[in-house]
Amino acid sequence: MKLDQLKELIQSEFPDSIIGEDENSSPQALLIKPEFIHSVCVLLHANEQTYFDQLSCLTGLDNGPESETMEVIYNLYSIPYDLHFMIKVVLDRPKPSVDSVSDIWNGANWHEREAYDLYGIHFNNHPNLRRILLPNDWEGFPLKKDYVEQEKYHEVKVKY
Picture 1: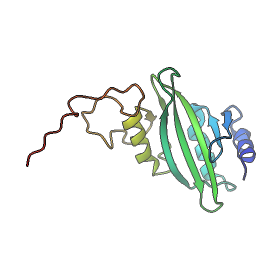
Picture 2: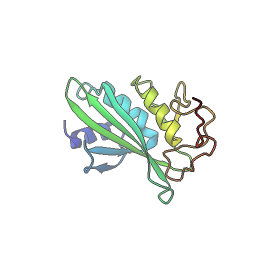
Picture 3: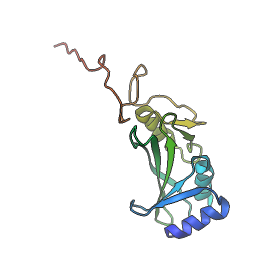
Picture 4: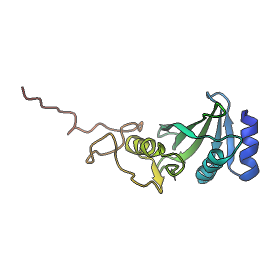
C-alpha cells in the first residue's frame, strides 16, 4: 500500500484529519491534526488492509523556541503486509499535548514516557505518565533546545 492509498483510507474515515505530507522522510509521512491521532491510529491498527500491528518507535522533536512547535513522530509497521508508515503531529511548544496511543500498542507506554521525560510532551489518558530515565526531582526537559543544565547534577562526588 502506497502513501496515496493510506491517505485515501484515512480521509475516507476522517476527512479533516490530514494537514500535509512529508515525502522527504523515510518512510513517507502524513501530518495529522493532533485531535485525530488516536482515531487514525485505531483505524490503521484495526483495518484489514493495513493492520499496523507494531509501533516501532514514537519520538519527540523540538523545532526550537523560534518556531513555537514540537512534533511527535510515530513509526508504524505491519508485519503481515511488510508496510512501513510514519505519522507526525505538530504541537504547540509552550504546552505540547496529544492523546496517548498506549491503549492501541502497549509499547507506546514506554515511548510516551520517554518523550514526556526528555521533551515535556504530555500524553492525555496515559496510564502512568511519569519520568522513566531521569530522577523524579529532575527539573526541566533536557532535549528541549532551550534547556539549561542543572548545577546540582553537574557535580559528581566519587569515593574510593
